[in-house]
Amino acid sequence: MITSEKINDELTIIFTASRIDVSIAVKFRELLSQEIYEKPQKVILDCSKLEYLDSSALRVLVTFMKEINYYGGHLVLKDLSTSFKSILQLSKLDQLFEIHDDR
Image 1 (cartoon, rainbow, N blue to C red):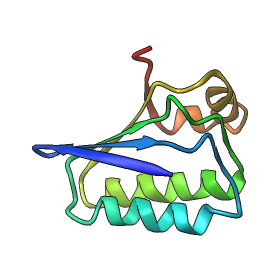
Image 2: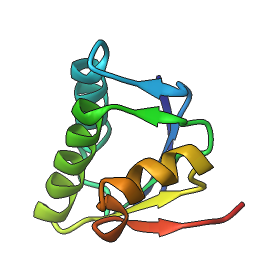
Image 3: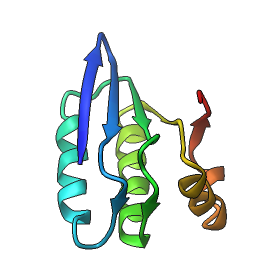
């Protein structure tokens, strides 16, 4: 579902699944929490393969961002697919997240 790599105090999390929905949202939450255990200062979510998140997965993503902000870290969403970007725009979450298009 995700892989990661850490360089200094920057963590990049790469989504390997194209869909995250209620059936795997709990596991998704656990995996993301494990990734930030050491409180990296910058967390980059590479979303290039991610096409769809349902409302439960979006809720996990918002909670993840709040956890990172709470300990003083910074979250960036990178390389959003067109469909994922549309989901964020429709839900107005594109205004909440920092989004970088490196495509």
